[in-house]
Length: 296
Image (cartoon, rainbow, N blue to C red):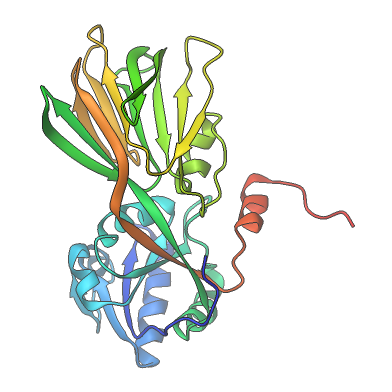
């Protein structure tokens, strides 16, 4: 993570959680304040619909990278994930204002949003690169669907609490076959999300590593494993399975047939994430997970 003097931002894109009154109020406050301060403001088109009227330019999400230097996402981590999967294609920095629950990715306090954001816009911030995963499903050797994830890729049944069988390979080396409810393949960013709930390890954001976490494995000796971040992970669905599902960040869903291959590896583009200068990853963990504070 870089903490040295950073470039200032001038062109600011605003993206917000839809149908949420607190988010709408924060967006209106940001829009008016930023315009009054002389910044160029661009509103994402779906976000603009809930503002009724705006003095700012309006563009769809996939075009924000052409017009803005910084995207401010107002909402929860889910909103950040949805926007970031698109914005990673452009050379645009992204920062989050927390209007959700946990807020591992959205760390600006909405009650002090203008003060904190003004410092960031003036170059007082930290920046880091977060990698994404790309998941591709192959049927009879031909690619049939592709997705990407910032948090995790999950292989699972399309039925509730249904055990599946699959094989796992890393860099074409056989690792194991497994019967379980599925497998969570997680980035360091996603290690505090679904993977954490499944008993996976917390990976600090700077690690170039991927974790594989079994979901309710039939064998008690099955444990999470962490592999090099540049590994190519291949999953093969056994012939005994019904149709399976592959989910990316719980959003993009792809169908997996018996004997289909799934190839998971780093996506070529990275997310440029911005934090306030006093951001501390370990403080976030203490606050969100209820860890103990100093006693002396």
